[in-house]
Image (cartoon, rainbow, N blue to C red):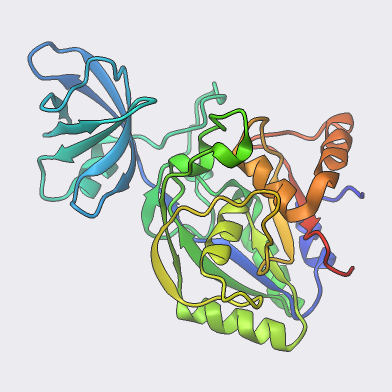
Length: 306
């Protein structure tokens, strides 16, 4: 194991490799509102849009929110249509353009362990961010700058994108004693045809697929063809990558150091095997930072020839 600045990533890769990033953008999904009738304060974290036009959200406090309760948010209202466990609710926004409401009345949600004030919300967006859709950033991509991207291109390393809307599945901790009993909820993802073509070309030239973040691994495996390639498509994924399952598309993984009890650590062990524990011991001993604004590692998939 060796230490590097992230600017050195292009030198750690090889000509012909393909870097895959998540181009999702974090929406201003944190909304503050009031219950109609009582004036009680309600905080909503909008997760994703459902097929019927309603939205899944986390609510706080959720105990007194029942179907039919109306929440006043900005210039619009949100009606609770269903409730679930762990603070999850389904709401319908009474406006023709909910996304504009989020952008104008909402704030970019930050990880709960971040206690400072983010003066520039763009710092929680990657340089690849396009259409809003996520409740959290694909944090491995936050390390990339235009200079890193330029140096990748100069070394003959191509770059392509997927789009996975980071939602409850990505940041919700494990809720069961046994990993295999954890239930994943769905997240929307898309693998476009150009990415399919670039992965196929990388395979033809013996290049490696470098997944930037666990969301990219999940999107690629959700659309895998079973032979190291992918097929184009979009839609929800409930894939929970855990030990005993085989990862076929990503060869290398750029990922942050994750917190205990997360599905992200489960995915990491699936990717690189039990050696992740040795890596984390070294990271702790050398003072690496964990979490969304922390440091990153470059890991190789278990069983792949070096």
